[in-house]
Image (cartoon, rainbow, N blue to C red; front, side):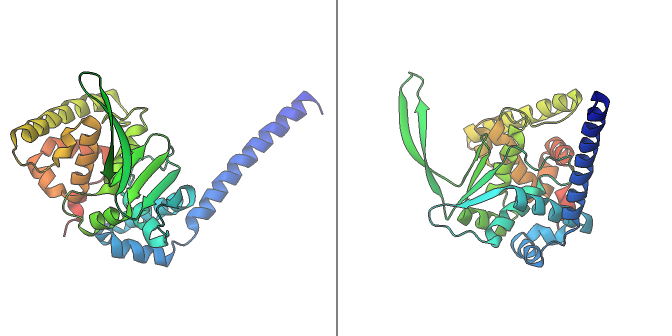
Amino acid sequence: MTAAQFLLLVCMIAVFSVVFVKLKRRWFERKPFPSEWQRILASNIPIYKRLPQALQAQLNNHVKYFMRDKTFYGCDGLVLTDEIKVTIAGQACLLILNRPTNQYFKLHHVLVYPSSFVASRSEQSASGVVSHKKTGLLGESWSQGKVILSWDDVFKGVKNFSDGQNVVLHEFAHQLDQESGSTNGAPLLGSQSSYQSWTRVLSSEFERLQKQANSGFSSLIDQYGATNPAEFFAVVTETFFERPVQLRRRHPELFEEMKTFYAVDPSEWID
């Protein structure tokens, strides 16, 4: 075989591979969405039935990929069911509607506990003394490709989809944040001007929440968001999807930043 023939063969294989991948993807996307999964979404995620038909179809497609590509593990004796997996996947995929997406490419594993789980934490005081303690958690997002969730709290959060408390939205917002390479409350935004606007608005709102938390004043945004910018972004994500009308009225600039980033307006889905 001559060099020219070899190069031609390599090019043909490359073209065939691209065509094969596209056909495989098209075939997968044309597979009917399981009716049982649709029933679960409609039953367990109140906002699902309020979505426009195009967004419902898009969410279904994202859920199919999520269910295919992410590995779920039941922990502490939890027996995984489609209800558990689809309920989690459906909420996670709300965050990637209408957006260029790689389907949480860094995420590989979703660990689900029956209820809140205990994790060991190390803390260093100002004097340099390191202490260890055990903390009960509802969820965690790891940059090493894992999300850990408490099923009791997942279900509690989704059944009350108007209180601004949702562990799935919170932890998957962290996953989006981590795609930039660091968890700092500034996910991948695109243009430099987007970062300038994002930094100005979110920094101002973060400081405002810190002042409210320190002074004991109540706030629409959960004051856990005053912990650091990463937690602020995750908490505001919960508020944006669960209490969008209130967020738009009381924090209009913040609402617009989140609306631009997530490319949806949840206030349109409110009855």
